Length: 72
Image (cartoon, rainbow, N blue to C red; front, side):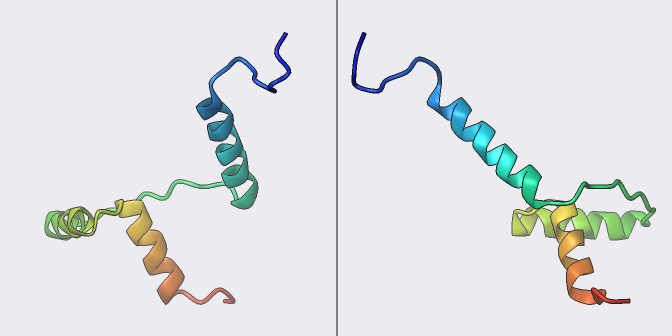
């Protein structure tokens, strides 16, 4: 046996597991929200999302954080 401290397995899997654990420990559970937009608003949002290289969910979360006070 080697005394180099090497072990079998994929190091990337260990890193992935650690990253997932850190994210899941740090955030509250997510809930799904559904609402309707007219077609023009939806297209506008999708284009903005693509141009800024962010997801629609990320944009909406940012808008909520910015415009709705934490203490209501």
